[in-house]
Image (cartoon, rainbow, N blue to C red; front, side, top):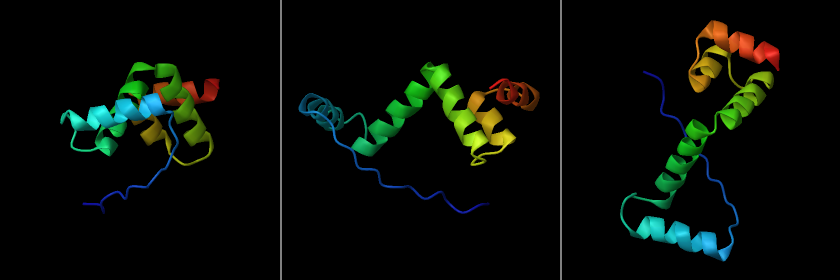
Length: 89
């Protein structure tokens, strides 16, 4: 089994109204932490907005930060379909 993935800390600025929403999301107890809520929100966005997921995957693939197998996993396509998709860009 491989070693566990390390998490990175990211700091960002939000307007007061969004800060209130983030705080409320944590306070209702549905998520154990604000980080968990944000991770879930990002996953949901990438699942729902395929064009963003495709663009991000293509960028990572072009930068050689991921291979074809990981790209196929992210795009939920076969290796053949992923290769064709990456060549279309």
